[in-house]
Amino acid sequence: MQIATFKVDVTCPIGHPLTAGWKDPAVGFADPLYAAGVILHGADKPVVLCAVDWCEISNRSHIMWRESLAAAAGTDADHVAVQTAHPHCSPWPDEDAQALVREHGVRDVMQTEFCHEALARVAQAVKAATARPEPFTHIACGRARIDQVASNRRVMGDDGKVKAVRWTATKDPEVRAAPEGLIDPYLKSISFWHDQRKLAAMHYYAVHNTSYDYDCVITSDFLGLARERRSADEPEVAHIFFNECAGNVTAGKYNDGDHANREIFTQRVYGGIVAAEANAERLPLDELNWHVEPVFLPPGAEMNEPDMMAILTDPEVQGKDRTKAAIKIAGLRRQDVPIPFGCLKIDKTACILHLPGESFVEYQLFAQDHSTADWVAVPSYGDCGPGYICLDKSYDEGGYEPIDSFVAPGVEGVMKDAIKKLME
Image (cartoon, rainbow, N blue to C red; front, side, top):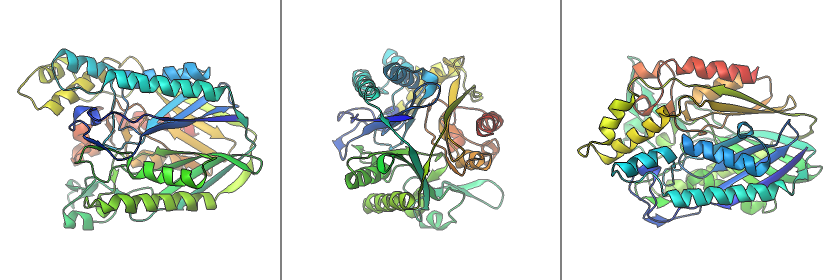
């Protein structure tokens, strides 16, 4: 079995749209954005796992990423997983949505030339890395608890409805004081070794990766900053960070938006990485398998093209709502193309399940419960065309996520059926 690694600067220019035009364009630069990953040889075909410091990549753009990296690695698109880390002050490309907003005079979703050029550079790096793989003989899997970073966004009332929303930065002290709620408090790390030499390490944690975003300054935020801090410890090792199922998980309980909190969260996540690796036991390995389940998620009830076109073309409608309509139309127009759920299994020790959208943390916990592996990670933020992937009951409970979900009730059964097939 062999591994190759790649890392490319994909920092967008000042002036680039942030979060698909839902925010104002970037006005400054705090730290670089990277696309980093591994190419694994040992399954039936090469497997590419890529994490990108962008907010999201959706629909046609996500398909383009998988196809381009597949061609570069000499594999097929179903053997490529591309996940974003979800810092808000970063790009969110959607090729078809950009064509729609350009046609109808709405502010841009993306700078097409930059996004294409960035993807081309990542593909070039994948191709170069594929030509120089190294053997790996062992893996080491560890986990460590992180306290006072993640909290559930949905604060429930006694009536079973959402009574308050804990945003990325939550100003209301009463909302911050509510119980932490359902999260996965553990950061997971898996490293790849050639005998005694560590080659690469991948890290996983579920939280909205945004401490503050009102300044519109480009940043990888605290997950990216923690990864870079760990990379500085071991410059010869490729460190890669994947965000897990954080659709309903933010730092809101512990974050009032004070700028100092970015550094606090960075240090806590960095500490989790160090502890998880210290807790890891290095084991020899014999088998590497990749499984794919093609999935069709049901579009939201309001997702019909005539209604969305009416919003998109109405100059009286707020700009971000017109942009959102364009992304919904782009999603509708690819409904005949399934979203692949990819699952990497390493012996009976480790399992990594790649999910789309802003999946709720319940799907991560469900996957862990249904896996026979001792160590399970569930990166989300793959193809983000579906938006928030809630539970069926979430639509009746209210709150923010069902409003920005582009899929319908019934999605929970589809998600869980696919997860069970891949886990069991």
